[in-house]
Image (cartoon, rainbow, N blue to C red; front, side, top):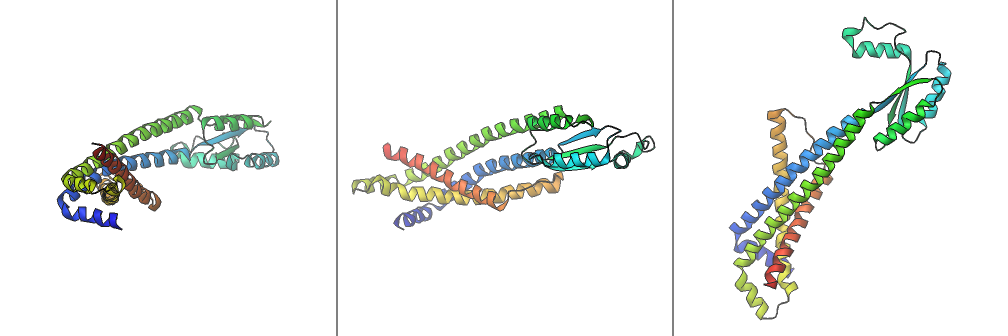
Length: 281
């Protein structure tokens, strides 16, 4: 309680400096939040594209419907498979005419073969798993050809991996900058109270006793800055949707809460580094 009271007294003694600190933290975390929001939307877009990953096994013209249905049931039992649709010739013709309406008069009733359309479970759509399932489908005796866009899937996962690596690197960079800025603002607060700290040291106050109020102050500033940054990020998303007409997704409640907690942690780390350096000086 004494450390909390001392932290609140520090806020009251230098309100402009405290406001500057919170504002600086908010803008540094806002930049981090914008990047995280962009990364979230890129991941969401990639997930939507990934949902379209499908393996299509075309059947021979002499495939018996009952045997094809039995094969579909066996394939549906694969642990990687989410759903298998047995598409008859008539259904394939209807789908082609619906999807390619301008060429609907070109398709004839016996033009398209029946097929097994295999959709994989989330987490089982990597190029290696898709290739493995396709190879197993090729072993079915009345399967004539298997298509799944191998090159397209490889490009998708290459893009996903690059986005993940770049995202992690930029996230660490933004977090480091935020820690440096927070540490600098706490350092300014300590310099403004250097005489008070010297007197406390002279009367025998321990480093832990001196450090605690500043750590609490850094944590509070981090929480306030995180909350303000979250509001600013939400406002930026609304502006993008209104004026650029992009449909975006925002952080869910859990992620938003973790973002504020991350602000608190960054505030603690920045304060700890700054206070430690000051006490060692």
